[in-house]
Image: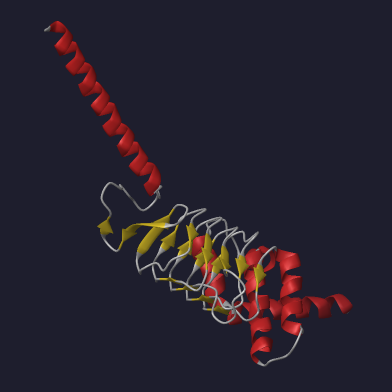
Length: 233
C-alpha cells in the first residue's frame, strides 16, 4: 500500500511538472538531441531541476519571505551545480544545457527561449547596489564558458561565442566572440575581413593577425624579388 501511495505521488508530481513547465520541457527536446523521453528529461535534466527550484524560490522572494528562497537555491546549487539567485527574473522556455558552473546573479533578467551552456556567468561588477547584472533578450544563445558582466543588455536573437567576455551592450541580431567580446556580425551585415557562417564563430583578433601576417609575407616576397633584380643589374 505504501509503495502505491509513493508511486501515485511521483506520477502526480510528474504530471504537474509536465503542465507547469511545458515551455522548458519543450525546449529540452527542441535544443538537445540527447533528450529521448519525457520521464528521462523530468528526472535527469539538472537545468530543468534548477529552473523548477528557482520558480518556487522566486515566488517566495517576491512575497518577501526571508531565508527560504536562498535556502532553496542553495540546495538546488548543491544538487545541480547551477547557481541562480532567487531574485533573478527568468522568462519561459529557458534551456540550460548540462549546466555545471552556470551562475545567474541577483538582478539578472532573462527573456524567453534563451539557451545557456555550461559555465556561463551572468554576473555583476564591483559592489554597487541596484541593477548590476545583465539583461538578456529573447532567443539569445550564450556559449560554454562565456561571461556576461555588468548592467548591460544583450539584444534579442543574438549569439555569444564560447569563452567570450562581454562587458558592453550588444545590439539585436548580433554575434559576439573573443576577450573582450567583439561584435562579428549584426543582422545581415558581416564586418569587413570576417568570414562568418552559422556554425563557426571566428576570433576577430586572430582574423586580423592572419591578414597582417599575409601582408607581411607579401612585402617580404616583393623585397626578395626586388633584391634579385637589383643584383642581376
